[in-house]
Length: 399
Image 1 (cartoon, rainbow, N blue to C red):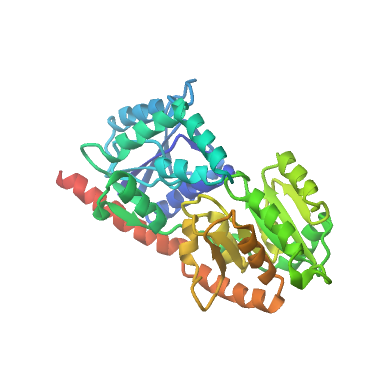
Image 2 (cartoon, rainbow, N blue to C red):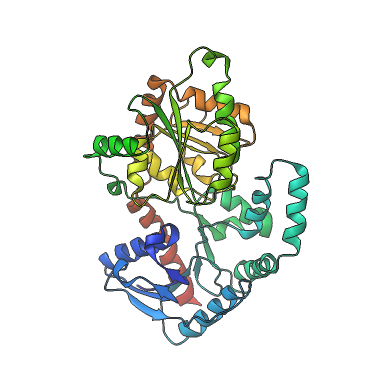
């Protein structure tokens, strides 16, 4: 097939969707499909050399108009060529398949409000959002994407996101295709695990016997770092640890701008407990240095950090606001870890942290995590996505 991708900036070093586009293009080309990319920016070295890149001229525009300009320019460029199927990954419209890996904007706005701990703050945030031009621009654009005269096939990476499409826009189930996100476990070779573990721990002053919980994110507020710090304080005040403080450390990886959270940790008496690592270019070092992942997010369509942690054999603590939690067997008997309902429930989160102190429990969780990770391979994802692309191409040809 002749397949076209549309995404404004494809710089795989930034991770996320951009890495996925490069990986998918590489796999399609291996199967002798012809792949075209329409983009304003791209990293030629990170893309397969066989891909055909078409530049969409970029020009300055206000944030709320920029996706409209790119989307319109994409349609103009696509009209000059024939493709069996076209696929967009973000704020584009008029394509055959849309795969919004970041979920729905309408849903993310509602979930983002939950990160504020008080109803007053949530109310103020709602008022601010009301006057945000970018918000209303994205609302209108999203309606253009999914409620047009020719509805696209929609790929979603979790049942949570599928339900959002049905609830917010009344999209029929037949138009929605759940294709689970996946990662390549080969990105995390095990042969130097102990070396990475000892080096990373030594670098950040963590002893070999200490239990390390990993928090990895760029958006600390949305991903639940604030309630996690409060829960960590509550962990040390639990009755079972009153006479025997647990050897626990919390490692924060991701955004290097963390001064507000460093101040909060200090005010909570956690200076010696929390390690702010900042940006980590080689994430497997952080995974291997840790004993479990804690990701109490307020919104994640399907968190890749959870998939990566599972592939590295890490037990998981996350929230039901994360589509990746659907991959975990959290109902009794517990297998990979814990899924909490409300990240603001510091007591429940502290209880989960306390359970991870037990080495036997962690080992059982780790074994289940590795097994679960093997069930969601990129090859399985690719086969499911190809079914959607072939069906979309057939509908296009018939029309």
